[in-house]
Image 1: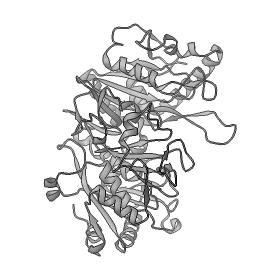
Image 2: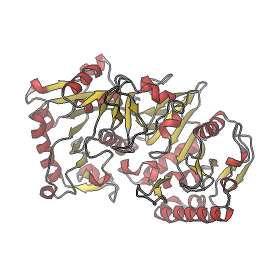
Image 3: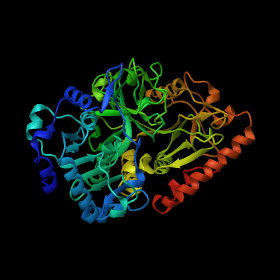
Image 4: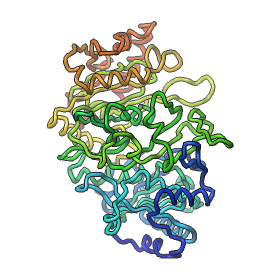
Length: 525
């Protein structure tokens, strides 16, 4: 689709336009321009500026023909007028046209039937490298004929007066479905480029019968696809990087009538406290051609300190999916045999693993629960419950029940097993209990994915109404029932009922859509 402003951005000052450069050259240019430095492991180390994460309060969807018909407007999907978007787009084009611009052209979606050709135009060479790393890179033959459908524009250093445009701040991230443009101004965080196009896919694929999902995916050596849903910090990327299984993708997938497919050609891993012992595949994937965002390195040796959070806890790494051993390219898999909902429960009351029937699965999918810490002030350690519908509400333009309906249809048709896995705390809440060791979580997942939990007995939890296995190979029995890990059983009951009530209060917004069976599949408390 041709757009006058995009065409001008690609034609003005052609000597300053760099199109589809190889990763090695983009790294060289980034170094020449002072955009980063090389770490000891070969990765390009960059800084995102003031914004070190997504800016959900500055994210908008343009009020246009498509969005007025389809978007679920509210706190997540905030409208901006076509007039304001057009003015800011013109300002961004004028700004970028004066300097060097870097263009990547490729695809989102490994399934050729549903993939979307895309283009990114960025001010920074390292942002172009990020797109080259994360999206699906075309073959030489495809590159000759590619016709980008959506364009992502990033003007990191453009300064705008929010009062002039009636917006909240100097950061502006907006999607225009009619013009097929994603515009990011004033932020260098790479996730805005990645998540912008993910939001687009979440908007356009359901009408084509595809279920878009915020999940990672892998497959066993002998088959058996698994999906891992979860919010940031729950282990979605870490746990799908299993040395005994083959990775399909770490974050975004579609589920069509033919099976599942990765949206991306790379991974965007959170790397705070990354350990070579616990996560060797991810650790070794970060090398030349990768990017480290806001990660601290030694000024003299370039050694990476993954434990240093002085810039942000949200340190990130990007790398092509083929950097992972035994990955599947193209990223396509069969219909999933197992679905795992990951939650990092900082209250310490959810079971380490529980089996869900289809109604329970629908309840927990719409709930999208995890817990995060309240903040970093001294003495404030109380966890905060977070509910994000479909385990990805910030990226879902349509009403959550649209996605839930697609999930329900596929669960019934393919008889997929569903599990709730707590990668958080046990034996007490954060500050009292201990986080469940990753080797325990991996053992639980191995048992579930291999079918070893199919024949064990289950007991329904009296508060959370989920099915807890009575035993699990290679896992201490006391870890399975959360109450048994607490010294103070009365304190457990109180904390569990508090969380159960939060579940029920949150789910009231979906009760009229979900039906009695799904509502009753939630916590009792």
